[in-house]
Image (tube, rainbow, N blue to C red; front, side, top):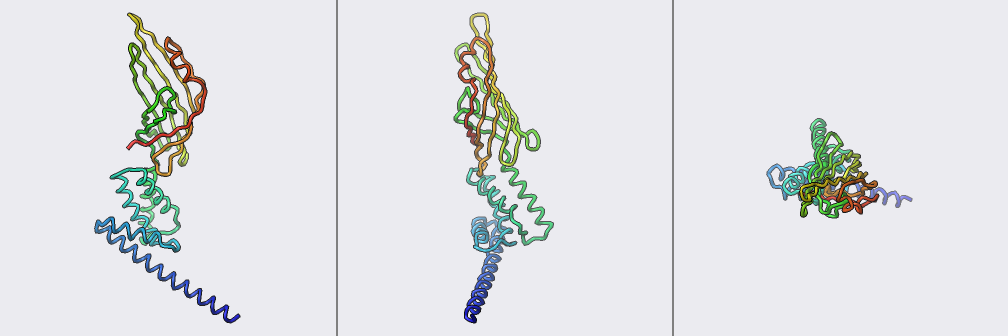
Length: 264
């Protein structure tokens, strides 16, 4: 019994010593990382700051401080080269920072301002405004390789649109898609309308063809913020005019998988 107590006490002391050593290493790496960062030595700073975060120990203020400085490094890298890999790394670290219950080595007021900055970084990554490419053409059922523009309307609301003009012989068609999206965390829901207005010329007369089809769309933003994936469900389309039969087969009710790629 006495031997068992001695063994337990020895193990406890060993853990305490190890914990103290780990604390000193985290502090050392964190300070070295900050120092190199302030000297514009980003590569060296990143090495030390990563070591701080990756040490196999409990979360603490040094790890949280290291995360913040790494976020600054990753944010600059993403601004210079907004690849999916860079976006994903910045987003993952920002979420890790915001989900941590630890504070930094700075005072509370300054720490709260850092949290606000990191929240803005994450909001920027989650902003889907910009150009997106659908190489499969499923979002707009009558054309392939379409490019869509997504614009912000108000908080959590976006407009998606596409317009292409095609001319063949004596027929000119205007292909248009317009819709609205609402954000719910990393998901986007909305409605859209795909339409075609075409004008054909024969002799001295013109012939107008009009086609519309409504749809419901659900999209999810990928973890690297580079793809919107999901599905669109179209109802029966309607149309009229001389060339309506050209589009008839595309207007039946259907559901299609969507993959939109963010355009750099």
